[in-house]
Image (cartoon, rainbow, N blue to C red; front, side, top):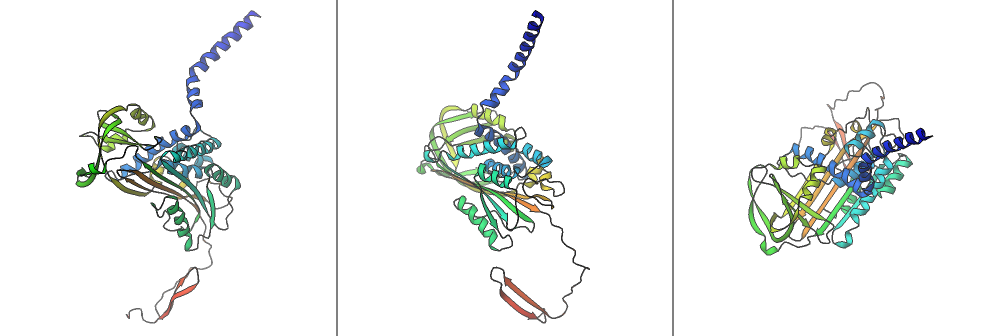
Length: 412
């Protein structure tokens, strides 16, 4: 009896030591709230994709919204399976979470980001699905995206010339007109567009005095000199510096939103400073800031960015989602045809002046279905080498806007 008691005690002690050793890891995971879990993955992903995009054009503006990209791809993740899902989740920094947790965390983050509107900063997030008319998407996929991401669902005739305008009008409305479009044309194989829009507008907690804004010289990434309107303000800031950079926090009215500005020191390159940042080092940078009195000069800014994210996402390991031969999106739609992501487009806008900041972003994920073209018979040859008829039709009405016979194409 005594031996059994001692053996049980030894086992309990060993288990206790193991639990004690890993308890801090559990505690950290358990004490991290749902929106913080979502934001942590989103931030790391944001730095990863920024590195890829900025490296392509090192002297150009590269301004992205990790929130917009992450939410658009997270919606798409609900329609992925197998290796496609695993690759997407890993690229998004979500490999350790199941889909219900990912969706719940993102829902909580969306609510949290929009909760501060009444305190000075205004953030509006909108999600939408634009489905090709006549196709049936799986109810579980549609329900999850509508419920957790508050996404609206619209069914469109993708062959209609008005379809592009309908989608872009939604984009324009949800970004307060700052981003007028995201879809240039609807691809022949397109079956669905998943779109996220983010709009941010906030006033500085302490505005920059307009009278102190002066013309100044700014040296661009390419080494050229250009004139800018430099805003100036003296006061107390949260400030810090290292051997390679200076960093300052500038709060917006209400205090829920702040801007961080990181400036390489003389002799340092922005690419090197940004390249050293990731989710962890960004946290260390913020912790290194302390209240100090000083002077901040910052240029008024009005910039836009637009690019396809496909090369960057592939470089980060998300490859099978774009390959129709191996992509697995069976949870999205029941079809015998292969379905893959055709493109991921991202557009942003930012304006900074003495009063505050306005920024907007849109991310569009285009889903394609590969269709085999039917073979209707023997190959044909058509050589237009004698008089012919030509007609130009307006599709929505069927009106023939131009119609005629061409008897001599060389005559003016």
